[in-house]
Image (cartoon, rainbow, N blue to C red; front, top):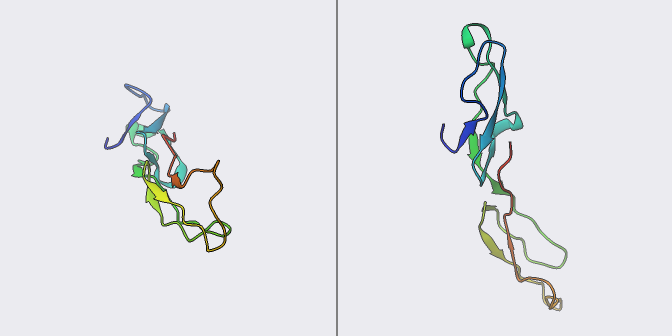
Length: 99
């Protein structure tokens, strides 16, 4: 399976297994459990999609564009609002593996 794997090596009728996504990916639709039904037809077959952090706008900053897992974005303060020395000037998309 691209960008993920199930939590079981083999399943029997009635068994439930979980899709585990690789770092930087998440289960599409958020439901990673799959059940092996009659004749081992699966209840559904989830996929792992690349994590995207949505764009955001902080107080007194320019909008920050959306980014993918691990990417960084520069934080630009509005005129008259200097970046505080103890805060980083970049932000990043930190989400990791989600089961």
